Length: 438
Image (cartoon, helix red, strand yellow):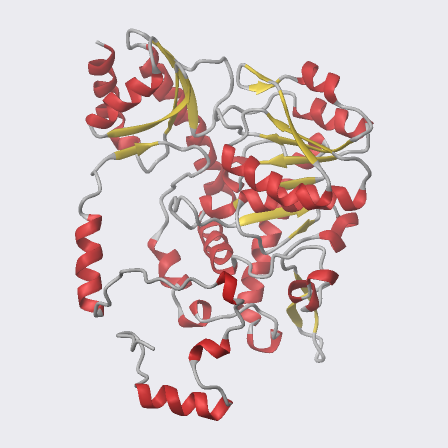
């Protein structure tokens, strides 16, 4: 056994602990079949903490210093410093899953408020607290559909983010569901084409608004009607900032709303998220992850507790409707703090800014020779699609050389995301675009 520079145990300490539990080596504590064991080495030299920090710092210095206008499912909004100050309190940082309400009332109340926020924004009755990210929330929604309705077909937009579709397909494989794409046209769902695809074997229909293009879906209620006609679960993807401005998904027939709540409280992390899941009360027993409820305690005081699911739900696979067992409680806490700081009016103001900014930037892009923006006549939220003369990959590469990163939507289309975080850099981006297209 190699001694670690990060743990305080000497070889003698380790041998004494092994003796107490009755094994000869650390390896005996792990029942890993021999055929699965890796016998080689990783050729990673052990370093002290100081050496490791210096090494990683030098690696990070090699990153390009660029301004991002990427979007694509990861969005940054300004996070007030008080979010860090409150969320970094030790009571929150060291908290395990809140199974013991007698020592977790503060955290449980914060999660209850987080759920209440999502319920109010979506118009549905029950929200969880929470799941890993938007992709896992989508997968859980499809699995719920398989439990409550009959059918084997799952319909999603054909331009759904590749990562989300991959996670969804992985989730539903064991349930015998098949994921199929339905056409989109000019930045919105092609409802007429979708109608041709919907039949009694469809169990789940998914629609995003704002979608991959940043466009708001204009015929969401018709998609909800098609789903209802065949008793399929209708799922809408939309985040809390967008929902502050858009029609509540419940009003267009949504049975489930999923997405990522980390647009509040967390800067874009490109991997870490805070998936949320909101559904109708009739499906409350199907909700994945954790659910915080309120009830009077023995003295009649309002108290909070995890409810409707025993711990077995999360540790016994054969009894679980979901195998998500670790939620994103600290991320949900940050989202709740940020939303509370904004308040209803502030949240609406932020959402309105997310409409104004892409509209204004698209207008400036459209004045550049060889660029048409937006590519489609739609309402946009945070991001928009621009059509360019030539290869979009090359245009994006040329912009990168000038210090600006944009997304590539297709062969001749760029996707540009702008929020209050990068709006001060728009002038430079437009100047760089003019150079590239000149």
